[in-house]
Image (cartoon, rainbow, N blue to C red; front, side, top):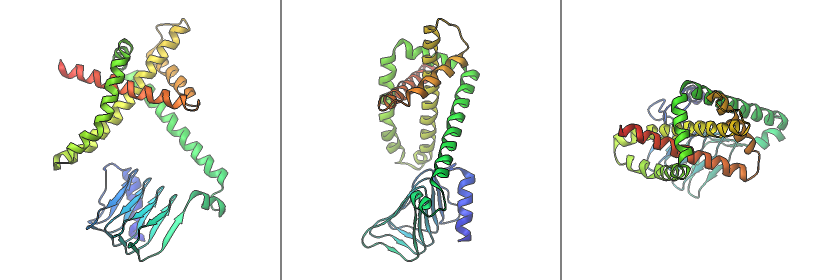
Length: 275
């Protein structure tokens, strides 16, 4: 298992910089996604960190999923061990696992005393706090460094929110068809990560612009206009965070903000490209 441990370390260090990392000729390490061994293919060790492992072919070594499950199709063969930490090992009829099957769910860890439930919840809370704090800091940094661009997007949304919503909805719907078209060529396949990065970037910037717009409405309601854009963005982010605590309605608000902000960003990019 030394080679598998090295693969785990390598996968964590790369943080999933590519959709799939071939650490050796046949070893697969996937971060924050699904590691797949298609039918008719052979892999060495297969590791998914923060995702699941799906095997329809042959795995010569071990199949390990951390934060996900291991699924075997009817023709799947794993010559080593099948390990799922935080999930289950599901085997179809006809599949074979020649090594050990290990399933370690978080409740089992807590029940065994290896990971107290209170400590687990504490870790999850700290992790969420770190992610939230990082998001806020990055959003405020973007607003401070690019106030004109963020202000332009929020202004366009404010002047025609319905248009931004329709563009955002259409853009989200087109993500999958565009990805499918890219799959028809080698060059297109290489561009799929670019598409995903663009979508993530657009969603983030659109969310920042929407927070700034909401914050601007707040300062106007408080009769304190002409506040710094960073302060307006902070007010908007705070309100969106508070809205997230409201069941159902909070989720609907966040979804609307993402869609409208995405549309505002796409509209701004379109205007720039036409100049």
